[in-house]
Length: 123
Image (cartoon, rainbow, N blue to C red):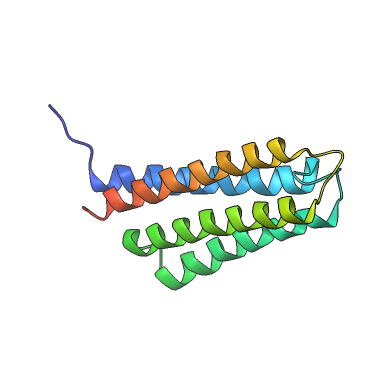
């Protein structure tokens, strides 16, 4: 049986991280995760993008470093949702379950990408 190489895990991890980040940008800018389209609360999601970009530069895309970057991106995503829910942002257009559902979706994508980076590192 053929095994999956570290290079394959790395490519899958990078691909998933990029797709998740582009989807986050599109949803936060185009549709609005929190509130209506154009709600300034959606700008908080750029913290997730900045963590990803800065982390990729600092770690030089090394798998073990990128694993940590993706874990931090997932945490920041969760913190943003917590802020939005506690502050009641986005109401009445974005009910809490919608914000929570989208947040869990992105956290899952970032977590799977982190796991793939972990596998790419040979761990």
